[in-house]
Image (cartoon, rainbow, N blue to C red):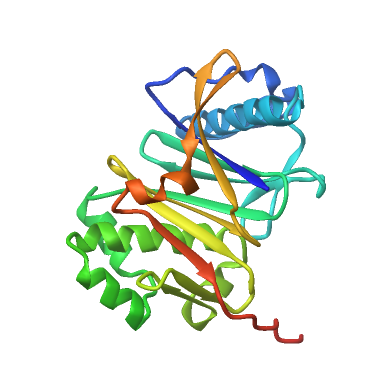
Length: 244
């Protein structure tokens, strides 16, 4: 099944709010100004995606998971994930399975560097990072991969021994997701990662052009050999979830 990946930056056309429910717009007025703008932009772009790909004229009702990740109330609707970095918004949408997305600005600031280096790393991850020409860029990519996977599950289930990344071999091990795939790349100043269970299959990239128009920019799977920074990790061990 195809996943749809859309990025939007503050310099591009703002998605119209016409597809947002009045109640959602009203609720946004209670948020601080900076958060309200980001909240409305993300929901407006998601609404445009739901209309363009699935024909929904108005954005379906959204709620938050216990971990504060937004998702549609109707479990039969597509799964989606949101991410922000600077003035860039990214959305991953899939009709089947569960998805997670993360974006990070590479080489941003000392505080960002400290955050990257506090991420949980296995010996395999550390060795791979140190072997790269730009270790900070490599560490940032692994950070986005881990964060994208975290958005699919409980954060506690995506760290330590529950999640191990093996970028040198293109593998990952997830105790709670025996079938899982994640990919990452560097796009200019931005590192991004998309994760999906059971697998990604096809990841179509789009750019919102305004006035309800989506422009397809490519298919990541087909472009993997054109980027030196491309990483694809696939789970390879089936482990059962411990009984309660």
